[in-house]
Image: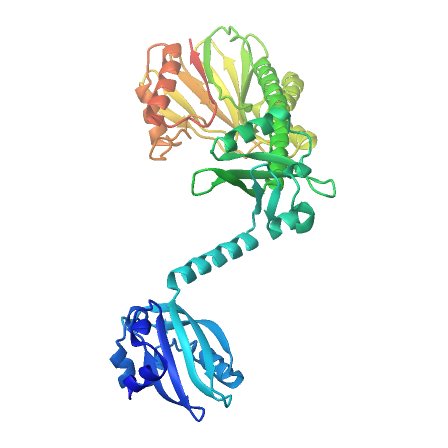
Length: 515
């Protein structure tokens, strides 16, 4: 290629070589390219030397990014066909492998015959500005597509921009909002001091965060959580404010509904607590306030109730100087309903004690019949024992309805034994039959009647005291000289067995000693 000829005919070499932009020129003869010139600045833009372009006439095309080659090819063809000029932005692959953006400006030089003589061009590296442009476009798309409301105002509060979410939420169009003050959204529920504090914060250069109670164009109220920040120029002066706001209307409605629900629950809980306390007072009133004095018997008891209402119940039936009855039962369930059922149990036992109080079988049979008749949803476990005091012994008849076995202490043998008797729970099965068991106590013997709070007490290994040998062992450890001391010792043993575990049931134990 005759570069010297090319330069002497048309251009000053020194001028071209001192241009900072990458300049190229394609010479045409008979509308066909015959030679291409590249300025030294080609290396700064592409990484390739002039000689590499001279040695490879298609290098200029291969460095175009493969995705842009077709549009560049079309662009060049249009310039040539129209014998005009134009510019295009496209990507090239730098010699080091990086992708660069260039601004490619082309113009044609026409001779007197209107044929193209030269196609001249400048290639300017615009990678940095293109990155900035792409970032701005990305930011703009993010703002436009944001699920949050975005408002930009000037320093005086006049709206200059709102995003589509603002239009959707408030009902104001873009054109209606521009130039207005955000006060068009005020509902009037937030006072002057609220907005004064907001302006003081952002005008001092700080971010403000808070909630707005606003009104849409159609008059509908809504809530927003907003973050408002100042925008500064290069000198540090505030020029604009940007508000990013989230619609929290549903959250506020939910919070209000929860508060109302909590208020209603508090009222209900207060009523329930009052009802439970009243039920506890009534339940306690059902229990004997003192132990009756019976010649030939020493009677004592210990009652350790839970805070829950319901549970254990007992009563004494004094038939005569020589005949004495004890009913002990455990109501299924807890709460006000159990306490009401307990009142039914007391009512029935008061009614039947006069007629059946000296016969444990008939007593439980009748109690079962009447409970089923009055209220079949609840049931009890229970034991009824009749003590007949003779000169040399105490004879006992007892019937059991699903209650734990009793423990009998024989003083002469210094031994404990379980008193087992069968019988289903009371108040559930029609036609249930209860059979009595007969015992004999001599002086010093003790009979212990208790609810399931003792045998069902659990320790931290979830092991229960049980209803067999371990239960007898507990009473053996609790053996004391007096009945009162023995009852206290039983409770202490149960507590020691449970350890840190909470006892989940009432504990009632009645002790009867033959004297």
